[in-house]
Length: 145
Ligand SMILES: [Zn+2]
Image (tube, rainbow, N blue to C red):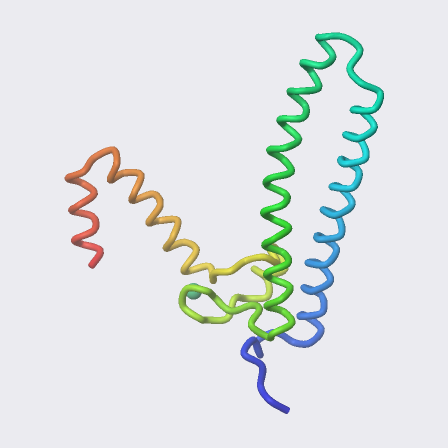
C-alpha cells in the first residue's frame, strides 16, 4: 500500500471531511434551486406596483451578491473535493505542511496551515499600514527580510 501525501489524516477523518464538503455542496445546490424557483415564480406573477418592484430589485441585488459569494464558495468546495480524490487534500498550498484535522474540520476548505494563514494575514495588515505610512512600511519590510 502506498503512503498518501496526506497521511496525517486517517481514512475515517478523510471520509468525515469529504462528507462535510459534499453536504455543503448539496446545501448550496438546494439553495440555488429554491432561489431560481422563487425568482421564476415572481417574474410570472409580476410586480403589482412600483413600490413592490423597487423592493424586488433591492432583494434581487442582495440575492445576486449572496449568490455570487455562494457560487465562489461552491467552486472552492468542488476544487477541494477534487483534491480529496487525488489525495492532495489537507496539505498547505504555501509550505506543503500538513494542515491539522482540527483546523480542517472547523473549515474544510482551508488551503493553508495556520502559520501560513497568519503570515498572509500579517502581510495584508502590513500592506494596509504601508498605504497609510510609506516610511513605516519600508522599515517594516526591511526588518522582515
Ligand atoms: Zn503552511
